[in-house]
Length: 310
Picture 1 (tube, rainbow, N blue to C red):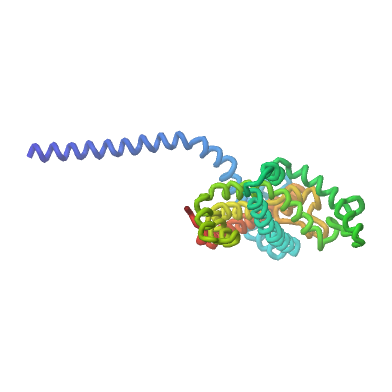
Picture 2 (picture 1 turned 135 degrees about the vertical axis):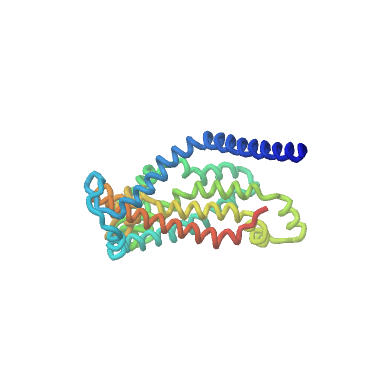
């Protein structure tokens, strides 16, 4: 009987000590996480929930709730021709910039990954756009696209081609902004892809060469599959960044001409800080979040199946 009682007492003590250890570990973990929790709550979670809350209201010029309207802000947006144009422009902008940036960056990374004399100089040149701000690069492109003194129209005039109103023609404005964005994003994508290429095991290429595999066969069967995690990452990041583009739009076109470059983020800026319609701007922000969320989920569902991890 005493043995059974002692065994029961020991089990209870062991259980109590386990609970105590778990509580102590939880407290320790919570203390370490507390700074991050405070920062995320202040700069991420609170603004996000406040935006969702304001999207159901009409607001005054100070951003205070004036009238509860429910889903009217969303309904009015989806019925607005201006907002529908903004969605179309945003989707076209993403389609113009993301695939082109990835393709050019991959091509440059493959060139820079070759073991050639002086290749370090080209790596520096290709990645140099990372050191240039959006504002500075946009000002440079503003001069390049200038209808009378711009470099592009001067080149066209040499070949006898009529000058193009790059930023003033609705048919060319979005494409022009896309070109400047592609150039601006090349440096980051190039560096990430180059790092991924340099992490591929050289023995794979040596074995393929011994078997007589051509360069394009190695590219298709070794390089792309082994680079797929890096490609998956850079495509996801590029998609998110493309949906959030603002700086070059504000400097180059201000959403014009004829709202051809009025991307969703710039439309949010106009409604919130020019027209002081914070409720409508908040509703647009929520819709933009939904677009990015769907695009990211689609990328994970479709792209992750083709990712080959070593």
